[in-house]
Structures are given as structure tokens and as C-alpha cells.
Amino acid sequence: MVIRLHSNVINVAHASPLPETDVTLNATACYYPVQLGLAYLFLVGYLVRTVFVCAGLPPSVGVILVGFAFSYFFQSDLLSARDELQELSFFLVLLTAGLEIRLKDLRTYMFVMAFLPATFELVAIAVYACLLLDYSWMEGLVLGTILVAIGDGLVIPKMKEFGFLFKGHPLPRLMFTWAPLEASFALCLFGVLSGFAAPTSSGVQVATLVAGNVLRIAVTVLAGAVLGGSAGWLISRRRSLSINGKQVLTGAPVEAFLMIMSIALVAYALGAQGSDGSVLVPMNFISGAMFQPELMVIMTGVFFSAMASEAEVHQVERVMGGVWIFGQLILFSMIGSRTTLDIFPVFWRHVFPMLACGLIARFAGIFLAINGILIMDLPGHPFHNSMVLVDSTFCFLSVLPRATIQGALGQVPITGQFFSRLPNSSGCQNFIFLAARLYICTMSVVGMILLNTFGPRLIRETLDRPKWGEEAKEKAETDKFSKSEEASETLLQSLSEAYQIPESVLNDALQRAMQSAPQMAKAVSQPTLRPSAEGADTSTDLAFAQFDCLGDVLNSKDKELVWRGHQR
Image (cartoon, rainbow, N blue to C red; front, side, top):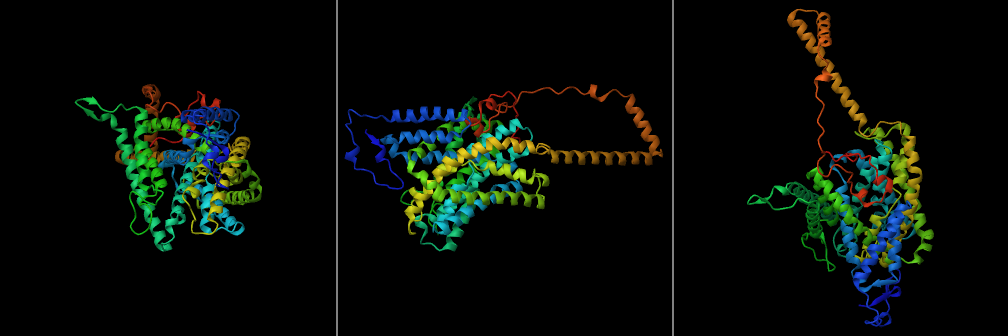
């Protein structure tokens, strides 16, 4: 076991490791256990992460700094396993995104808000890459897909915090659902584009490739729904399994998490592809697996949440929140270990203009999406004509932080050897990875500062509006009251005709009878308070359990049990 110095760590821009003899030290004097490297990553990474949280800064940046420092004394075993560790963290990102999505919240306007602005920004980045960087359309689309996704691990906890501070305001709830949906959109689109960008895709006709990818998506969604739905139904009923009258499974929360994580790993494996192009379940007429692995895991998580009991989902989310702490530490420390200071001067030359073009297109997409929803009057939307500009600005600030998806996908074009049959493929791969790291370092910090500073002010400007779901509730109550009035008038008319009594006389008699009767309120017994279901007595939202919010919100005694709408 030897120490590998920073000069031997692979530099993406100039991948030329030094000879082994130059960095191999005396094995007896410089033994470097892998346990020591892990202890540094977990303990120091977590402590720095916590300091950033307390300072109101994005914790991912703190972990990246820890990884950057670690690159100067990287442990050799961890260095060789860096890609595998990052892939496992990426798997947790997929499962997290799936568990955060609720089928009941997926209305038409939500898809418009999650897909249209992101598509605007993606296309703007792709056009910039094609016109100014001389990339192909495929290279530009892959670049845009990696950079466009919102940092849901940063935004979701902040929206949860705003939900506590401004109870009932619809915009935090909107962004809470929007964030994982957009992340899933980017991940799925990246999986589809990978089928075109991978080297094995070049010998197939475009029409056949498109048809194969459409079929792959359809089969993946169906298989994910079956896997996730079956898992949710069975895991919720696992306590009823018994042998000779004895319960077999404990019913503990970690047990449910272990089961759904294992099933999600199976889902990911069904679409995984080896370094030599081999797959477990191949397609016959195009290369690659029958299932798209990213979408498969997301669909498994979505349908598990839909079919499992509410208490079971809460339990899994609590455990998942703790496991994702390790995932964050591994993911962002590995990114930091690949980062060098010489990437920052490139930011102003190419990355900043591209970022500016993308953000201008994003704001235009948000503004057009909200106006389009108002014009079409899509059911359930929370927008109002007098608040379009303020709502657009708040949504724009909420999508600025970027971290998780960029960290998970930034290096994939390099490891997957994308665009290998195109000229300058290596330069494009390196630029994508460089841009992803710069997006994380700049957008996570600047985006969170802007959201923390101006987000509450924008919400206060739009407080005078119906709460989430209040309009629909009021309409339902009005309809119910109108129907009740109509039924009473019909009954009174029927009685008047049956007994030949004028309606006015019959109405006066009924009113006197009601006044002489005991008060109904005293006759009705008070409802008995029942304890909440297991797992439903605390706020257990997945990303909120990651301690990315401020301590005063986490320690608040004012708990709102159904903030996100877990009730099915």
C-alpha cells in the first residue's frame, strides 16, 4: 500500500500519470491504510459540511473542498475505486429522485413547469455549444442535459423551510414537486442520449435507433411500475408473514429500506452495461440493454411510494436520508479530488457566457410556462395574473442552485467514451466535466445566496393569495352547499304538494321545531383523539432529513404532518 501524490492523480485535461517508480515510497515507512482514508472522508467531510450548513452555505461545496485537499494524499485503493464509488452515489441520486415524486401531484401544469423551462435552457446551451464551440448537436445536447438540472438536494430542503415559515403558500410546495420531477427528466433524457452518444451506436440507422429507444423507455416504465408497485404492496404487508404462528420479519424501518434498495439495485442491474458493451438483458435490433437503468430506478421508487403505506414510505425516507449523507460525502469528495485550481480561469472565457445564455432562456421559459398555464387554465395551478412576474422570479431563483446531477453525470462522458467516432471527442468530454464542476462551485454558492436573500421577500409580496388547494376546497364546499340547498327546496316542495300545505306555512313550522329542539352541538360528542400512525408523527421528508436546512427549522416544535401530501 503506497501513497499516491497529487501529481499522480489523473488530471482530466492532461491525463498522463507519472511512472509508478516516481511515486512509490518505502512500503514499510509509508503504509497508508484504506481505513484512514475513509475516516478522513467521512469525519472531516461531515464536519466541514456541517460548518457550511450552519453558515447558510451549500454543504456540497464544503465536501468538494475536502475532496480537493484529499487529492494531495489520496489513498491508492480509494483512488482505484473512485469511479465505482461515484457510480454507487449516482444510484442513490436516482432512488432519491424516485422516492420524492408523488403520483397525486403529477398534474398537467406540473409537467409544464418541470419540462418546458428546462428544455429552453437545454436548447440554449446546445445552440451555444454548436455555434461557438463547434460541437455537434449530440455533443451540445449531452452538455445541456448534464448542466440543466436543478440541484434538488439543495432546493428541496430550502422549500421545506419556506413551507414552515410561510404556511400554505403554494410556491414552496410547487418547487418541492418540481425539483425531483425536473431531475428525473434530466436523468431520463441523459439515458436516452447515451444510446446515441455511446460508441456502439454508430453503426445503426437513426430511425432504428429512435424506435429502439422509444421501445426501451416504454418497457422500462412498465417494468419499473411492476417492480416498484409489487415491492410497495409486499413490503407494507411483510409483518403478516409467519411460520408456526411466529412473525418472520421484524418490520423495522431499516428492513423496509434494505428491501427497496435491493430491488432498486436489481432494477439498475437489468439495464447496466459493462465496459465491453455486454448487458444482462439485450435488445435484438439495436445495441444496449432492454431497460434504461436510470429511468428504471426512478420508476421503481415512484411506484413504491404510490403502493406502499404512508407509514412505510416515511420509514424508508428516514433511513434513506441517513444513507444519503454517506452518498453525498462520497459523491462530492470524489468530484473535489478530480478538481484542480486551473479550471477556474476557463470559467470566464467559455462557461460564463454559456451559463448566461442558458439562464436567460430558463427565465423566458418560466415566464412563458406560467402565462401559458393561465391562458389554458390548467386545473390545480396556483398562479394569478397579477403575480406572474413575482412568481416567475421566485421560480427562477429556485432553479439556480446546481449540484447533484452535475456531480453524478459530469464524468460519465469520459468514463463512457462518448462521441468516440467524432473529431475532438476528448476535448468535448473534458469540457463537459470541467463545466459540470464549475457549475457546482459557482451555481450552488451564488444560487443559494440569492435564494436565501430574495426568496422570502418574494413570497411575502404574494402572501395575499389562496393557499395550496384552498380554491378547489372552497369550490367543493360551495357546490356541496348549493346542492344541499336545492335538495332542501325540492323536499319542501314535495311535502307541500303531498299534504296540501303552503310552503311558507310548512317552512315556519319546521323553523319553530328546530328552535325548540336541543342544540345539535351539545348532542354531538367530541371526537376522540387518536395517535398518529407510526412514522407519521414527525416531518420525515427525504431531503429534509439530510440536515441541509438551518437548525432552528429542524428543531421546530411546530410540525405539519401533511405538508407534501403523503395522504393517498
